[in-house]
Image (cartoon, rainbow, N blue to C red; front, top):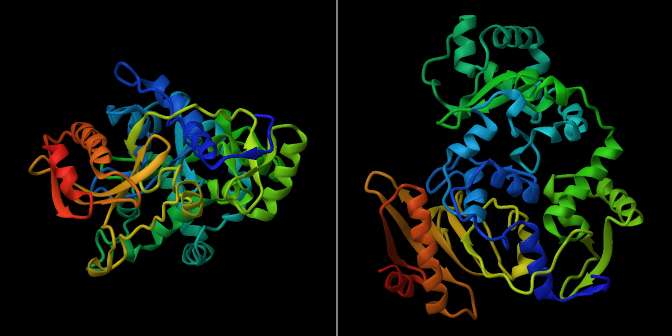
Length: 407
């Protein structure tokens, strides 16, 4: 690894290995030790509420461990004692589960969000500090609570027609969101993905809250963690992992190079300077195959996915259906160190069928060989989701080969 020039194929294998996607699957049922190993690779699980196939934070474990019990992640993040909790939620990449021990690394961000992350939550907080104190008092008395439960406790009635509407948040929801962003409140989730806000010390723990990290050290450590998770990366890649400003990442990179944690390298086909993490490894080959969440850390920074895999990827959830190219909820398919296909999936839980609404092959790939492996992984995903069948629709240039392989 002493070379300063890295080939494009090597860079792909480094990136895949750094994310734990070159590791063998567990031989038995995945355990909390396996979850810890995955978190040690990825550092975070991005969250998303869309549940048409599987919610985003459950997918990275499936992609790396195969079929596992969803309760493994639920216990690690929400259904456990504070002192044994492994994961907590905060704004890392976007809303994400991060190791509980990493909470102090985001103190600078909590200070920036001291009145909330968004303008409308800041406005509500600044106009309602007394009500915010009442919210904290209710949570202190009653424990983890939803905004609706807090409203009921305070005797606040919602205007007609707004019950259950996320888009018409009342003041209580905005205040909870503002205090979540500032770190005054934390949260746990229920089976319906609803946040139950609680005092941060009860979720994160006083042992972690007693640790403080200054801004410079936090940015250096977050940059180092991003480098470890990516294996090989540009400054833009490193900044995106935790949504840091490149102006703060650049000096952190310089410090890490001086310390021997990062090595400057050039990568075939990359325009910008790249940096190789000290612990990065280059497998001779990657044999694993798996479906990836749209928000998997391997692909959530789209310029990097394009640079690494020549994979142009956009989420089309908010694109009108007639204008979608690939589908509503499209998952990339990783085969070795390549992304040769993508599939639009829907878990039809009522009928017990994993619907493949479309299947598209990337240019230059062989349909039959890709379809043969993809069919096996779709069946594995169906079993993981407690579905009994895989049904391939006719949309997409891979659909015909995939239908034959699934059958």
